Each structure stands twice: as structure tokens, then as C-alpha cells.
Length: 113
Length: 112
Image 1: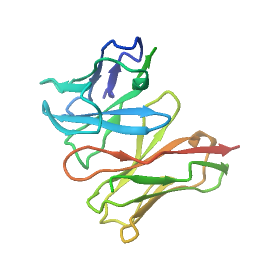
Image 2: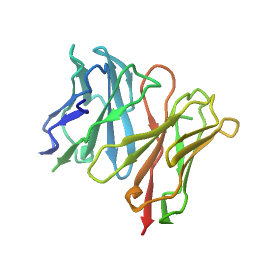
Image 3: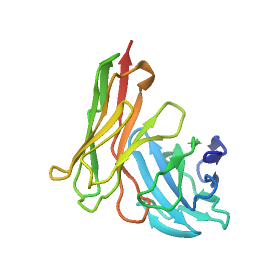
């Protein structure tokens, strides 16, 4: 069974640009969550999608957005990139949402210069 | 109230020893407590998880102890091995939404 796939693995962007990250969950999983990991702030929840609906959102500015498609694949978009957006962005998938096992992808390393 | 506090920040253990990592939470609505292991360059991998109605759960060399009244839970790694050297995160969530609140992480080094 394939794991969670995130693409691309690495990205370098310039301040002010926008970026789209992709996440393909484990087959059959309907919940996809996104997290930002930085040395200073640790792992922080961005948002969660379940059956194409955003079910929960963390405390991030509106520049961070996401969506989920009917096949459960999810994308995350960050507009007007700032240096502080440099981080490892992780996607996690689970079968039914809260209280069920969540499996993480390897992440997308975003560097903003 | 949403925080999960994790300690210690780093831990050095000799091979064969017991590694103990502690977490504390405030929100009594949390009802799911997983532990994750992360190696450099990789995403976190689920190790073991527990719910508040159970005081202890063991899987192989990994044990979670849960103290509901104290709002604390801990990870014990028995017979620690150099391959266990990684960063460990505790987390908590509540209800049907998968919003995991993570602890700050513990960097474990197991010396041969």
C-alpha cells in the first residue's frame, strides 16, 4: 500500500511569489491535514480537509489556503511568500478523521529567498 | 489551554537503557494522544497512541503511560537502541477533527 506522497520534495521561491504544494493521501483515506514545521515554532496545524470540506483551520494568515479534490488529493497554496514561510510542510492522511491513525508524508521543504 | 508541554528537550541514554519522555496538557477535551518519531529528512511516523480510558498501552519496546487526573502522559522506550536516535513528538487531539496539537519535541540520542 503506497504511503502519503508529497510533491515536490524541495522548492526555492522568491519573496512575493506564490507556491502550490500537492499531497496524495493513502488510498481510501478521506482526511488530509497540513502542518508547518520550523525549528522555532515546531509542528503547527494549518488546516484539515475531509471529503472536500475544510473542517478545521489553524492560526495562520489568509495567505495560506488549501483545497481537496474528489479523489481526496489535496493542494496547499501560499501567496505573497515571506522569508518566514521557509519551512517543512507536511501532509497527513487518515481514514476517518479525529482519533484515527494519521500518516505523514516526507514533506515539502520550502525555502523563500 | 491548547498547548501540550513536552520534556525534556533532549535526552542521552546508553544502549540498553530506558528512555522516558513526558508530556502534559491542559485541555480535558483532548481524547486521543499519539506519539510520533521523526528522523532527519523524514516526516513523523506514528509510534503508538492511547485514549484516556486506558492507563497504559504497550507495543514492543514502546509503552505509553497515561495519568488522566494529572493530565500527563509519557513514552517509555525499553532497551533503547542506537537506531532509536530520533526526535520524538507527543500530540493530542479532540473530537472528530484531526487537528493535532504537538509538543515541542525531544531529541533522543542513544549511545552505543
